[in-house]
Image 1 (cartoon, rainbow, N blue to C red):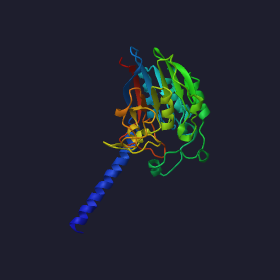
Image 2: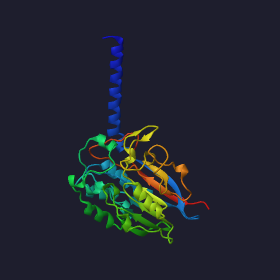
Image 3: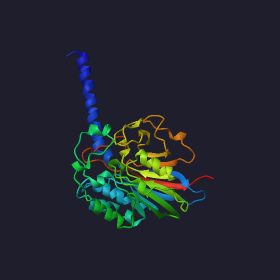
Image 4: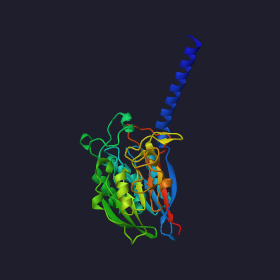
Length: 322
């Protein structure tokens, strides 16, 4: 074997080793390396007291995930003014009891929830490459159903508002806040027409809740006057490229908004930079604040995260200037 061949073999071996190490890290380290993100958003009327909202999303829980359950329970120590669960809680037929145990101390605080496709239908094995190209959920007829009624009852019986195609006013700290929510757009369960209408003038703000942040829903909510919208679903891309970010969002939201806080206004997704969206720096003064959670879990059939740690978010709403 000549020197060139030996060098090629060493290089190939090194790359294979690095690849295996990356897979092991994504599967056994980062996937359960939970973190709390904190953002402050100036969305309240001038002079208002702040409001602290805890958002949890995309647990994709299976029985036995004790580390995740204990970590979610510990979030109650933050003593948020309000809790939002933005869907995809389940990944197993027997996951409702452990999910309610995870949420138990949070259910003692005011809250609201919307559902995602994985609260209705169990995950199925699939080619992971499809995630990089598909924007739509698998046909529900091909998937086993999950105990969604038990989940809704468990969350709703605590006093939390069920915002699946619903609208209501809740108390957050010192504020009355109007909530407008839809069922999951990813499987076509959203019915925004049922809750459409101008934002109330008798509240501190109107907030939209949705699992999958499809542009049609974001445009409708913000067009009606919602000044904050909370969503999940994207997993932050789940497999991200360091210094670049998410490769996909699994919906029609651009990848620059795969997680975190950005500005949204009707038509924001039509022109601009990577992913086809106008940058937030072009936002009009009255643009809404959009927060997309990267969530806490993964499908049991794709149990990896890379450069995208599982997360919950503490969002502090502050008074606007002027």
